[in-house]
Length: 173
Image 1 (cartoon, helix red, strand yellow):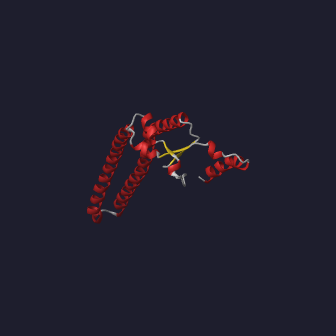
Image 2 (cartoon, one colour; image 1 turned 180 degrees about the vertical axis):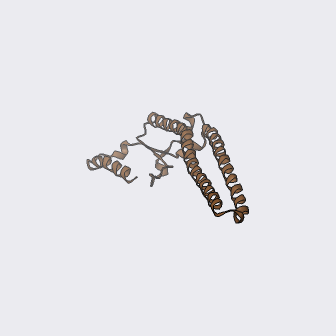
Image 3 (cartoon, rainbow, N blue to C red; image 1 turned 60 degrees about the vertical axis):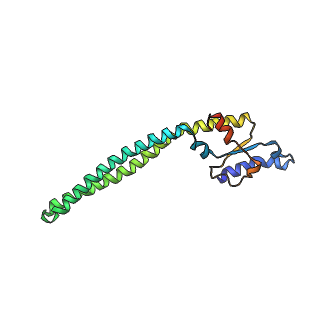
């Protein structure tokens, strides 16, 4: 973030020191990309696919936990009557199951993030393209994304909100 602000300042420095008004030549607009993403119809279908995938992964996890709980309950009922060798073998089996469950949880979390990226990237690309096309058509020099943490300050009354134009470009209400 600091690098991008520094790079922007470095680009403006020659124009500012030459006495020309850079800001008079620039047309700056802003948009909240999260607002446009929230009304994209593709997002609902992506959310449904993601939810189904999440449920499938959780179902497997629940089955693994039920298996662990059943074996742990069975072990706890029998442990006093088991020889130390069998007890150690059962404890090792429970530990192994517990580790498999933890490993599955980690991998499932990674898979969910990957799936979310796969589902959202085409929507993000479509929105970015629409923003770019609107910016070029309306001769904007810069478009600031208000959903990004890089925007520290903007005078809302001096910046043009592209949200209505991008919605129109995408055929959204």
